[in-house]
Length: 49
Image (cartoon, rainbow, N blue to C red; front, side, top):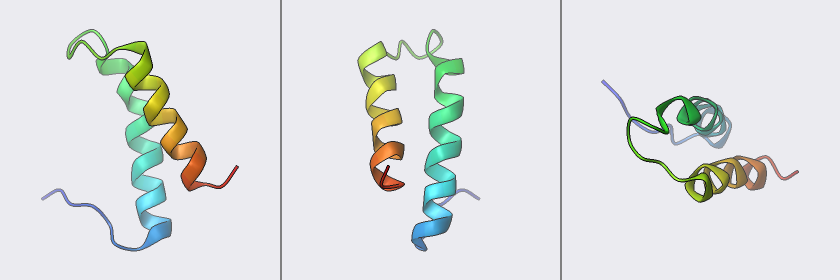
């Protein structure tokens, strides 16, 4: 069962995990560099850095 956490801290962990694994699927799913950068930026914003 997969779901998004409602707690901000737990969601941040999920988003960080997703973002860190996404580059490994770049070629399989034709993910662009811009899309990878957006995912990294979302983590950056969420953590307030």
